[in-house]
Length: 274
Image: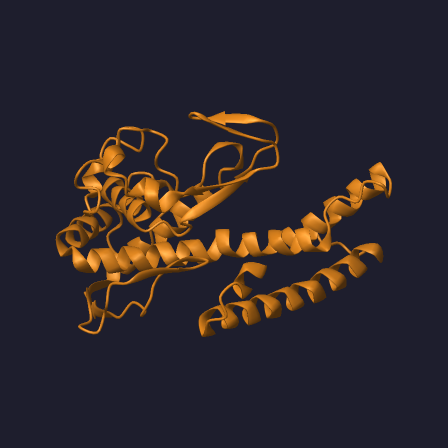
């Protein structure tokens, strides 16, 4: 993440410092776990252990000339585990509460659905699949405020995209945010919060079934998307069962990106017990 150095603003300096601190911690964890694996300890109870053990087995089976992943590769995977598994879901929930505070009629509809299915009991996994209104709301929030606003792909061979030819090794950046706000794809109401556009599912929500990309696309689509949505549904159900919420007067709507899309000045929300 050396691009943090590009503009020496206080925010970028802080981001660069945090990145260095995170990488230093991960270097220590990887060294400790690698040592434990070499000493014969079982480390298969988490993703880092599985990743390191698989990498070491690959190197052993294929010889030292095939080194597998470097420590830097493992560090980047650890960051991905965190942001894909925790950061993005928490950001989705934050934007969902902001948007439902702005649109109390949809908050009421979602709460009515949740209470009709679960009452005040803990939501069950099977019941989450029957949440139509909540699912529509989450999809529309992901469209308007995708946690990751872009993703990159590297061409492995010469490729033709539209009328442009790209050589092998070219990095191509796809803007999720722009695609999700394109009126030619979503219509003239593209900037409005309208969960009903997903009433018949993702494929019929827009003029291009491949234009909804909150989890990426193709063979590298996020493998945790189903888990993330189930986690978000569970959390928003439990919030709706217990609270109603409105935006505080101090809230200022200003989305901005620091790795993921956040409200610049925080999300000041007032909760009321129900």
